[in-house]
Every structure is written in structure tokens, then in C-alpha cells.
Figure 1 (cartoon, rainbow, N blue to C red):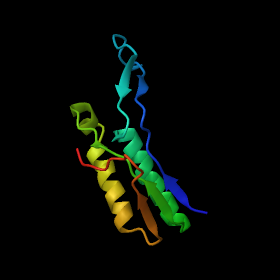
Figure 2: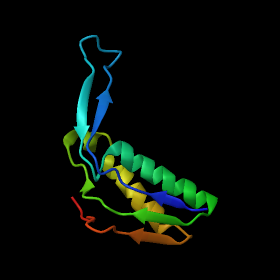
Figure 3: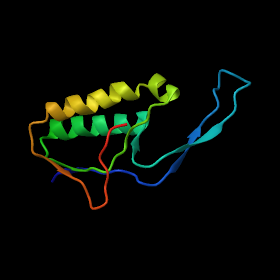
Figure 4: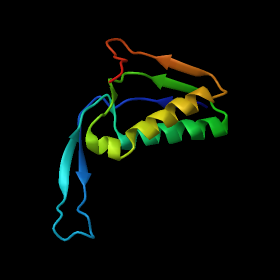
Length: 110
């Protein structure tokens, strides 16, 4: 057994529900670009790494990322905190970590 972390390369539509406490708010749809860590995906990645570490499993990372989202809303939603959690979980990881960059893949900051 081992954990595998991959990346979504397609653009996704995200549903943002209306605020139930604000009668004037409306539901919206937003597009999330592929190969980018948004607050929700960065948190899932950090939590998954913590779970794998707790279970003592090795991890394979299929790296093909362009970086973290950097919009004001994403900063408000703590994308940097979750990104730091990913780095912290990787530095404390005691099992083998294998990083694979697939052909034509990207690995860059942003």
C-alpha cells in the first residue's frame, strides 16, 4: 500500500452557494484553472499527506503544477497557510517520498 497524489489538469467549475445569512446574495459559478493549487485543493493535499504519514505509508507525487492561486479571495481563504502545511508535512514525512514529473509536465512556482 502507498499513497498517490495527482493533479487535475482540466479547468473545473466551482459552485459558490449564496450566503444564507444575506438575503441579497446569490449563488455563483467560478472557473478554477487546471494544474493550480486553490485553497480547497491545497488543504486536501496537506490533510492527505498528514493521513499518509500517520499511517506510515510511502507516497508518490505525480507533479505537474503551475503553482498556487494568488487572487485576493484565495489569500483570504488561506491558500498560503495550506501551502505551508503541505511543505511542513513533507519535511516531517518519515516514509519514502517519490516525485515524478510526467513527460511534458510542469513544475514551477507562481
